[in-house]
Length: 585
Ligand code: GTP
Ligand code: SPV
Ligand code: MN
Image: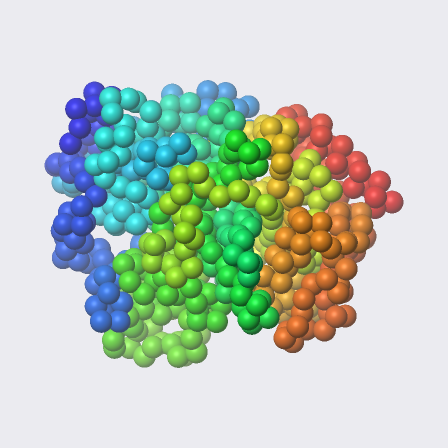
């Protein structure tokens, strides 16, 4: 497939260790992918779904103990522990290579090794970065062929260079106690073993496009962020772009594809999706911040996706999609998940592969079940999706799941204050990672699990980037998840979140005032359009309320969090912390 000596040498070494029966290069052709689907169907690795209802769609089930990212087993192996920081797991690289070599040795015996050349963002574009993933999983090949740009053109673009990320993945025996997702940022290397689940094994995604890319971005002066990118088109046809960082399973895919409420649709507003999970950001020649989505598809949360919450996502999954860990409706050979509709199928198979009836009270789909779908199949995909320059960013939005404390929306006072707001984000944990769900934890910029170096250095990089952007985006924080005393969400969310985005854009254009509070600027309640909502002005006032007592507690938590990160938290952020404390007096 390639005469590139660097590639050949590395593949030889990896094959000598893992000992596959054969090596197959993925060329990106439909014929080859189709042959692999057929092979995976013949072994039961994927199930072909009803061609009339869901053309070219497949179902896959992972092992029951392998259903989410494993943060406790994810490592950043830099030469010094300090460079990985206090939040990441760390081990000395030599020690880790030795440990993993034992697990990889012979792990592909009797199997085929697939070599997947892939590009994050458009091949040949200034943003593009290349990787090769070696894997013994056809499921991984089929997913990578949706999520990234795969094939021979990547090898061509690499020429005889060695500037590519070396990814090695083996399912091995899927042993939980020997599962490791390991990054060696100084070697451009990722090794993942004993998992077959999404974020653990689709190495272009979190491992490369966030952990390794954030490391490279700091070195090279750009940013890799856990952000969606969307464009709002006004009736005049002008489009403003917003990026938003929410933790895993906190609403990025939903916001990125939102359908405007009637009041805006009738005026001619439209929303376009550029990306739903990852943004790479650079300073443009015009002094603005520009964003590209390095991915080629969506690896979205299935449960809760329906014709009301996210019709665009649902439409995207109607063809060419791989469903993972959802319910199999055997009556018509389709799929189902909680929240799709109120008619769970009879004669169904749950995500574990067992006969399942909704009456049992047990969930049929895993809460972190997913769809892997092509971006180009999304009805609201932006015309700029493949633009190598990306799109200019007007506003950056942070947000998380907070039952109380955080108001519906507030604006930071400056770039540095905005960085502070992002750095102290907290959110309830979700099923996207193994471990307890619903526990509030700090998740700075929604990047806690994804920064490939020290968190304090990461904050400092944000501060430094602010100095390099002559015309920076304004920074906001949102919270769609405030609850009432019975635990119900107060804000309707989903498409109606556009009402908040409209206030954000109006603020960016200096078209609307705001109330100054200890934490930043909060809207005058009249300035959020609630026409057509089953929500009165008093309730909205409540959603915008900043409770000083709660924020004093919050401030104590921030102090503790910063101290836990250690000495590299920049002074600018400690200054912002002091300002917050003084404002709360
Ligand atoms: P990752 O792919 O894990 O990074 O997740 P994500 O941030 O893209 O989250 P996604 O949009 O898939 O939403 C996750 C869950 O949150 C789904 O169950 C949604 O139904 C729910 N959700 C999304 N937006 C809203 C909202 O505005 N309000 C409420 N109440 N729930 C929401
Ligand atoms: C997330 O957990 O933020 C995801 C899914 O987007 S995964 O690819 O598994 O990381
Ligand atoms: Mn994500």
